[in-house]
Structures are given as structure tokens and as C-alpha cells.
Amino acid sequence: MTTHLITGAGSGIGEAVARRLHARGDDLILLARDAGRARELAELYPGARTLVGDLANPDRLSWAFSHQQLPDRLDTLLHIAGVVDLGPVGELTTKAWRSQLDVNLVAPAELTRLLLPQLRVSQGHVVFVNSGAGLRANPDWSAYAASKHGLKALADALRAEERPHGVRVTSVYPGRTASPMQAKVHQQEGREYDTSGLMDPDSVATAVLTAVDLPRDAEIQDLTVRPGPAPRPRTLPG
Image 1 (cartoon, rainbow, N blue to C red):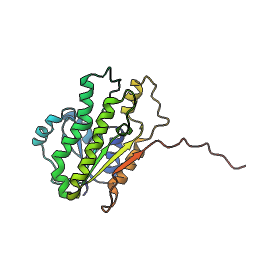
Image 2: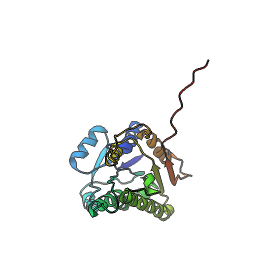
Image 3: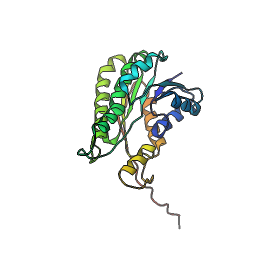
Image 4: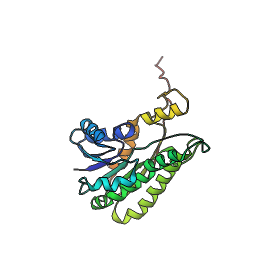
């Protein structure tokens, strides 16, 4: 059975990916920040296993995993969790910088390091759900964009390093997607949360699963997903 470890499975794109993989009967290991969240995820996805580790404290991940049973092999590691905190460079505190860098960049690097032996056994696949901010930085997005630019660098380096071991690496760059994170972004931008013009998390999940399910003789390295054009009104015949 195919085994996937997923971060961010509780909401947004992570929830859509986990739900789709669970529905088709794949084996899921869901990372939770604490025991309470682990119980919630286990209820959402019956039969799934949980692993407790706080991405906001990447220095403790190795210690946390040493007290839990890791899988012997892992087919896919899906980095989907993330945090955002907007603000101009002149106002962002070091706490805001560090929290985003820790969760969005340092924790994925550490999690990948800890699970590389299992990924090499299965010649597995690492998927980083990045962001359009990982390709360009707009005003007020400096810290978040820096963490996502760093995530792109991590993926590119990892891909070159792990090719001899048969491990594939994909970066997915979604545009704005309807999710609790996007609701927070709208609030920080001083706008009412409006999902029109946003992608559905299931649409991004389809892109992620396309990369995961690609036959082994190919690799999607970078995949950009953007909201499509607004549908035109249907014109009824004469």
C-alpha cells in the first residue's frame, strides 16, 4: 500500500489532499502539532496514523520523533502546512520573521532530513506546496515570500542531491486559494473575505495528485497553478 506523510491535513489544500488520498484507500500518516490535534485528525480520517511534532519548533522535531514509531518506508512526503503574517519590512518584528521561516522553511528541511532514509528505501517523492510568493515578492509579503523563496531553493537542491537515490522532488506554486489562511490574508489586507476569484482547494489537490501519480519514468519539477478566467455567461440558443 502507498504511504503518504502529510503536514497541514486539517484545513485548506492539505485537507483536500488528505481527503482524496484517504478516499482511495492509501495509507496516511498525518503530522499534528500536539496530542489533541492528533486525536482530531484521527477522527477525521479513520484508519490514518498520526505523528506528533510542532513545525513551529523545528529544533524539537528530532526529539519528538525519537519517542514515536516512524514508518519503515515512505512513498510520499507532502509539505502543505504553512503560516503567513503580512506587514511592511519597516514594521515586521523578528518574531514574525522567525515564525514564518521556522514553519515554512526550516521545519520542512528538518522533516525531510529525518525522513530521507524512508524515502530512499521506496525511491519516494517529496512535494513542497509552495506559493506564488515563492516566485515573486510583493509589498507587505517580505517575510512570507522569503520563506517561500527559500523553500524553492530547498526543493531545487534536494532534487539534485537525491536523484541518484531515485527520489523525486516537486514544487507546486498555487495562487490564491479559498482557505483559512486566505481568510487571514484578507483580514490583514483590510478586505472582506470573498472567495470569488479564488481557487477551490480541491483544484490545487488535483494538481498535487497529478504530480504524485505521474509514472516513475517522469517527474514534474515545478508546477504553477493559478485561478482560471471567470466563466462567461451561457448564451442559450435562439
